[in-house]
Image (cartoon, rainbow, N blue to C red):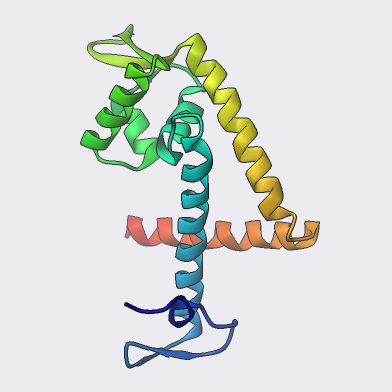
Length: 165
């Protein structure tokens, strides 16, 4: 098993040898974006576990705060396959956080709706996320945060553009 030091990402512009090949700056950027994303998701899972949720179930509550939503639409917003969104809905429903209700626009489908307990849990999720992100973003000054947002949005748009091709 590799030690943690072997997986550290190099400083921007540097190259490192990993698995017998040279990793350039482009791969460093993508590796770092993925690494930060995984670390943030892991941290959110740790924090939300304290209230019986996960990163994904917390995100589902946030999405459902916009109003009733079909499972299919929630799955698209969460970027998960139908089986996973069904499991998320089952978990949230078993916890009393959402209800399945008939969709008034389509009798063949059901909407997920936050319950009053779901609204309370959503407020907890928002507070936990805000505190966590304040701690993380405090490592950057306002200009650095703005630049990080700008660059990440460019990467997101480039990924979306490639997916559309």
